[in-house]
Length: 122
Image 1: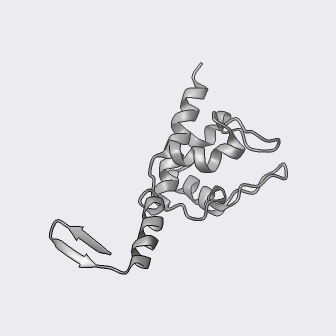
Image 2: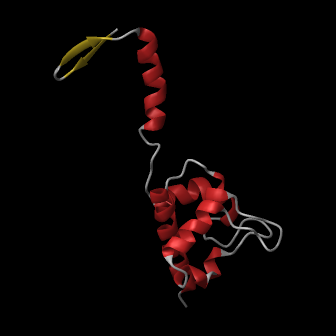
Image 3: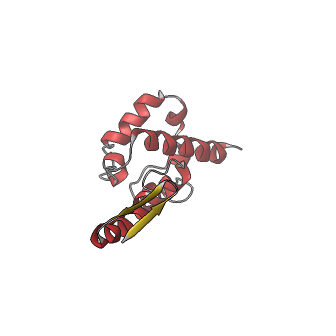
């Protein structure tokens, strides 16, 4: 198969082209930094759309004022390493998504803070 580029063309085995076609669509978007998208993909299952918790024993983020007291680095470390639960339900490291980068964790934390700030308003 011949691949054409603006600067020229190269001959590439068909098997490599097929592999690239299957791999690229998934990996071009492998690093979303949109906190809401990450939250909906990773955190929503347990914490729900408003952070109040979808399951018994899951922390209610919508009433968690520690999000505004603790330093961001502490919060990121807690998300990164997991949070032991006092009611028997623990949050796994990175919410169970080991592929999340520090930048993505920061992005999702900012989204959670924004969401909680809206929930705490009278």
